[in-house]
Image (cartoon, rainbow over all chains, first blue to last red):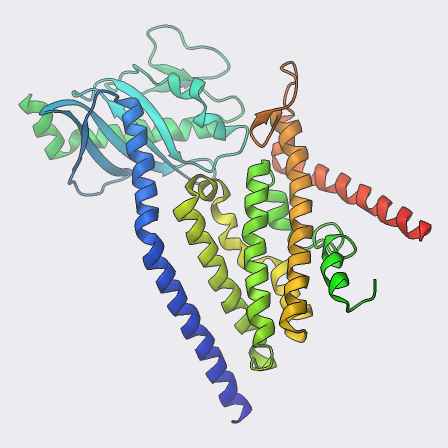
Length: 195
Length: 203
């Protein structure tokens, strides 16, 4: 066999074997990986909406950072909404899930699903103390932030993460912008109007 | 210990030719993922898997791979194992896979792996290549373990997630940020160089 032929044969063989093993592993793991992601999302929504028994995914066109809309049901009654949202953070994409009341007027809480912010600074958005602040904020106006102080009672503001104002700002943007878009979706309008 | 003996080929990666402390290879994962001990261990294990498997395959087929396409062949083989490791972590250790993020796919370009294939596995028997890869993996593991221990204890007050510093201790934030990685690596490199020189004098 000439050298150049050998070269082609060997490299092709390696590529075929490698491709075959990759597709095998992909089939073996794909279901589990999707399951892991869904489980993290479901767990997040369960903590935020403990009374819900079931989350029904609403089929809507993907728009902006809206990754998924879930109706939280207790029996037949709508007890709230779960929204999976994403958007750019300081360094990489942030994916969160937020829960609201049935009228989408009040925020019940937020869980961070994926973020790659600076460890020790922006990454603190996963801390309980920070997330707790979002509980009960109004969604009828934008949520804003203040730096280095506790927001006054009644203000629709949260305290920014110190030394990670951009992470905070981006996180609020994800919530504020997408909530506006969600309220414009026909199906959601029908749901809210019908009740 | 004689060069070429099985024990030597294993031990050299741990100390004399430690990939991080002596050869200064694989700096990117070393500096980036050592923010917590858990991440450090996971990274070291994933890299070890890729290194050992690639060395086994490449040393077994070393006579079949034409030298003109060897690098391309190595990269395809390494990339395959990296993807396997990546998918395995995402399926079974979702939290760790989330924390390591893009650094698992980047094992492909870790110079320790390609370096060992070129310098060792492509010229030696399967047994020797395995010992060499195991030794290098151990060396890499030790380096990452040391680095991440120092950084997690000083930067977060914890070790493997357990509080080890007194409550009054205020974590040095800088240690878990990139500069902390360089400080720690520099100090550890210095210490290991001093030890290396001392032991040489004694011998």
